[in-house]
Image (cartoon, rainbow, N blue to C red; front, side):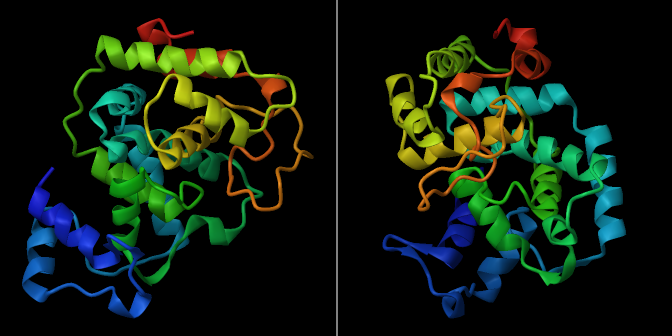
Length: 248
């Protein structure tokens, strides 16, 4: 990563105290130009739904499943959360293109869309808007340009450990409880453990049997909301994404 360009992007939205107020989301012109040249910041984008759909179709044809898998696994130890994000965008983009019951809002198309805040979230947290088609497009577009390193033995082992923790879930265990238990195998922040669960749910690896379950009203889950421990994980989707590496 280009550290200078990354810092320019991050400082546009974030301080040590957290989010900047929206009126302070400003960037020096010279800094913006540098970050733009490095592929970290962008001019506002106007895109229609048909244009977005076409570009998502093209990305799903050009970004291989292996690249998605390798990026996710490698991120487990190299901390490239932007690489990790691709699993969710790949899965949700496929969903947007195959289901005709999704509302237009979920595509994210429109006029003068801010791609910079999306890339900031992608780099800092591995994305938080995987349900959004415009985010999926940006995420997969940027991932397609990356030279992904093969996952290490430790990456593969970590993924298997994550699945082992899921497999040992109690019947009524919620996503929030699972997030806590992942500390057993991942010495990372709560936010990072939350993101991993959401990405696995987005990819239908954490696949709920029922859709009428509710977390506490203060929950912040999207894809994993209806998952419970009795559901464990979907072995066929684990095989689809990670079977090449003997992960079961």
